[in-house]
Image (cartoon, rainbow, N blue to C red):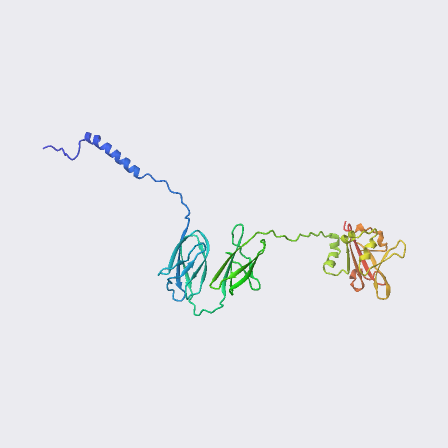
Length: 349
């Protein structure tokens, strides 16, 4: 009996008939596993948001509640399960929900990803006429649309509130005509009339224009070390000086002699009765003509005429008489009338 098995072909037959078949099979599977090019991820044009309305007291779903969304022509109505779904572009929306027998609810909705938002309405026990209506004001930058936080928004003749991080501020006010004002540093003030509705929410979108803020100029004062060391600035800042004559004031007067500048100092009289020796007189109770004010130059007493110094030399002059004279400058003359302290511009050099 032959051992040949007819189900298995001979070696030669196998290589002749099976190879083309296996090659085509390999090509078929190879084509099926070729990876397809990945599609570029794109941001969705809109986001699906589901709003779920419930009774605030018993958490029961509210069917037939109206949900108004800005930019939508008609309100959305909740189903028997209290839900309603809609598509919105990414952004921020102030939606209003209402149902008969319930108070109106305002909610700021942030749309960034699909989500379910639950809103709870409170049942009205009694509807009273003249109840305060809600006025919601959003303040934003006119150019960029960015919310402005910290802006002061006021009802003229009423209260003032500050906007939150979203640029929102809310008032409870009687319905009717009102006027709101928004103020913020760096922005031009904005005042607008508004009509507040009595049936719930009145929303006002207030854009503020960027305004250049004019700040007062910076004043820089350079103080002399010489005057600082001699207590001149301390006496000036504390109000101890009775009469003060500054270099700026001296330069304003068209004077040829320094004594001429003291003609404008109240309580001081210029005496030129002695040729070549001009002196300054201060008030004296015992003498109606006054008494001579002792002259100091850079803290040193002198008997020279005041006109021996040119007006350009003087930085500041202090004038004292009576008990207002500083202790260290008293008792120099017998009458103890007073002193004139001249401080030169180069006294500290």
